[in-house]
Length: 400
Image 1 (cartoon, rainbow, N blue to C red):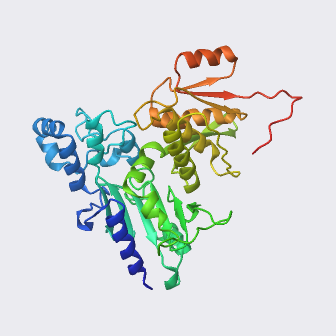
Image 2: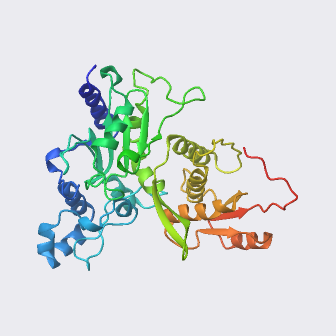
């Protein structure tokens, strides 16, 4: 128990026995493409046999040498998961790399496809740059998360894991390249969890992924002889939970910053991959679960501190409520209205929700009058965002 390997053994066993994972084979990992080709091909052949057969017949040479359903140079993991992955033949119909749980049980075929998702945990894969993560989580052969483990009883903590990510992990390695493969990296010990979605060497920024304890930092004592951090692999990274996060929470935030230059203004684009922090995931899921069972007509108060990601929590919740069905597959809310006093928040909410829907007409901004609101409701717009405009003489609403 005092060795890091023992801690790793326990976590691996619980991932497989309790969280719906299969043991992965490190020898099946391809360091050049940072994929498990056999897993990917097996998934496609199982879930899309007709499409694979057609592809194999029309492009036999491509089918023989294909190592993934996407070209290594154009195989962003977050894009593959959100939409589909394109075969090496540009004219081929895209293959699905994963299936997400449907909002209702009305389509048994969709549910069956979802159940074909296969999550694996692989230890000590040999990557291109030689350094190896302790644990690698993959969905259908596509790596999506890495975990570095430390056992304080050996004199090391999550801080040593963070140091390892910053100094011993090459951000240019195919496995760690931003958006290309692993979408989140966890630094874990028996007491705390920290995470990042982008490795940038020494400047890599980690956020806490802890539950909080006594209105402060850290985690409460584990129950039933569990570690304080057991919730990570028994709850958050459990099969259905992780797939839900990938399909309904993960999104790419794009911000443009104006930079004055001698000839005028230059726009600089910054991309941030958003993986929900624990408190965001917890509050959205609790509200969705209660609303699913008790339906509309209830009031809730959620308190988020400054800088804790309120806009993302609002966007995730609005999107989930707009698609929520009760236990009898009946839609609960026909429209969700978000009222805010921050005009900047409007675009953030619209952009975030679009990440999940990718279609027009899902979100409408109301900034004129009640007639505009009535029209939007009559048109059945799923999510409506309205901004409270404050006059110069009126006081600003106090922050919660």
